[in-house]
Amino acid sequence: MRNSTTEAPSKIARILAHLLTGASINRFEAEDLGDHCLNSTISFLANHLGLTLLRHWEKVPNRWGKPCRVIRYSLPETAYYDARAVMAHLNRTEY
Figure 1 (cartoon, rainbow, N blue to C red):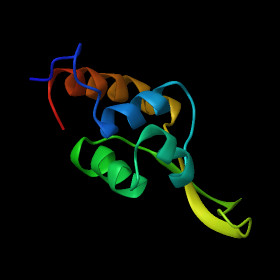
Figure 2 (figure 1 turned 90 degrees about the vertical axis):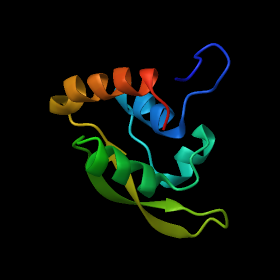
Figure 3 (figure 1 turned 45 degrees about the vertical axis):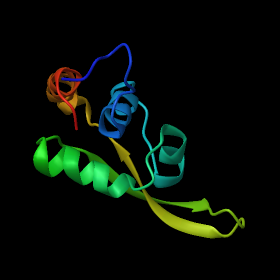
Figure 4 (figure 1 turned 90 degrees about the horizontal axis):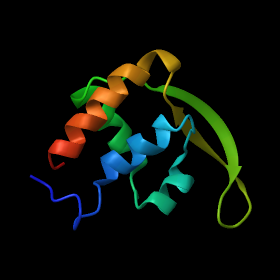
């Protein structure tokens, strides 16, 4: 079991906490939360933990200022109850 006073939350918990604020996220923004492979985190949330996530393509500038297509992820309002239950589970276990 994770000791919440000494260990940082997992990247899955950090991304889910971000989404539970009502915010959305793309792969470049996820870097600030320590997630270097957001699509894998989203896949885990959806396929292993059963959450529904919205996906929308968008164009953003890459590090050289050129347009790049990425997916912006968010939680639909209907998934918040389940997402909070998953967050409670994540807070009790390690991933």
